Length: 357
Image (cartoon, rainbow, N blue to C red; front, side, top):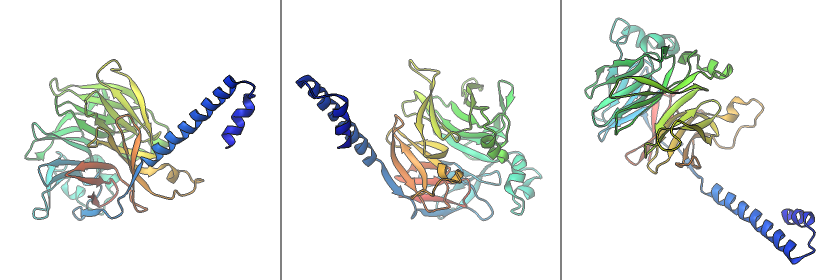
């Protein structure tokens, strides 16, 4: 009612034409409100509080990213530098891949639970993004310290593919995705200045030296697609392979880099996010799941605690939020992945993987 009164005072109703314009304006306002309400109602809320927990082996934590193979095969990098494989309830967990340092004299250090993980990461490695090339069976690994790596279908010691691009060494490899048509790998280096163990410095110092990178499967070369980025993290190739989506932990946004078409080479905002994002994965509908490590309010001392604890959002292909994931307080996610009609929930901080059916 207040909107109508304001509009009629602004345009004196002296003629039929004027009243017609007023009525049209009112209808536009009402229509806009209805569209806004409809959009809000379309955002589905899924509470993952009752997810099944798949515990990690004793002494390790941080299933930051997940890769899948076959019916039961689940692979994840953990805090001691290894990539583990879950072979189902009968087989349990086993070591699938490791780096050269882990398989040397450093094993006692890497497996010593008494040493803080951040102190041994630079020696033992920290595998973050993991994805399979389904054609070759090779698993690609973005290790925060060791570089871009891969291991064959049977596992074993991972091969280092690259440790720098354009003469600039990697400092903090993070997210990763594989183009299943070409075998090319898209990945992020979150900072040219700070390694993972000092990731809070990236935020505190507003560091914007991150890069979006591409490993060409044919030439074996790495190219820089976009530089001077603020904390680029997760990356996912779109279903139509026209662009890659990159999550920026700060400033809580998702961008897309166009690979093909009239916008090729353009880097544009896709979505503002309600929290600090980690990994991005495609969903089954052409959109994307974005895991949230923290809500914006958690780093704002003056903000009131939100009514619900968000740990992830699902975006449409156009960046519209269509679903949100909530969880119990204290739960943080680094990845939300769809597989086998389930949501698999990875966390860089917890000692288990969540499975929500």
